[in-house]
Image (tube, rainbow, N blue to C red; front, side):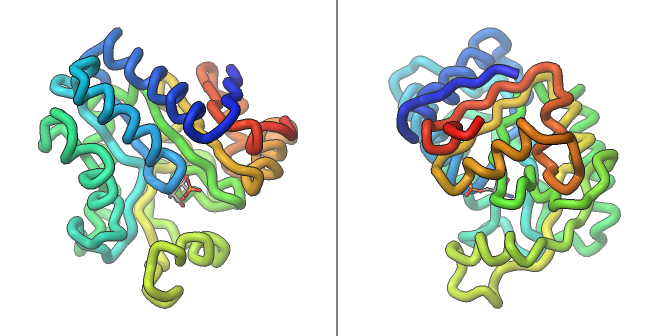
Length: 241
Ligand code: GLP
């Protein structure tokens, strides 16, 4: 595991964007595992900036996103498909058909999970997986207590996750209660994982995840077992490690 400590959020985004752009330069047809949440926003902004300067291209790359709320349409402002369009895809040259996000409106959730697993398999694996972490240690929407061997599945969201994400909705009642999420098994299959963490409020869970035992109670702790993890964070988030 490699740890990169930046002094602040801006520095952290630059470091993480550097790793992602190096991946695209070394392998232009990389499969990128992409994440949502407030943490990666600055990374995507940095990548768009470099793309606009002609330093970077996504033309041959493809992407699979970690998760999507069940019940939200792709054009719902809080859906993760909308987030990705708004924060990255609409501004770079990635082919629209090469970007993948679970379908929040699928009628049959089992079929949707199977379809998404098939999409991931058909790409021969993710080259670089971006990840954030929730306050309870969740990665993607793998909540505490879930089995590590799951692939894409439908997750009932923990009350703390609904609470944490209500800031993006008009009221807590509008926050979806379920989400499609890549499972820990899918995430651990990525060749390289880039975990981004920012802010004092993530310091305690990060210390538990990387200084404590590997346990489904702290899903991010499984990353201790991955052979190629880079944690990029700001000092506030990393100071307890
Ligand atoms: C959501 C997402 C996760 C993300 C987490 C933390 O629950 N499903 O992928 O890592 O939020 O988000 P933030 O970066 O906003 O703290």
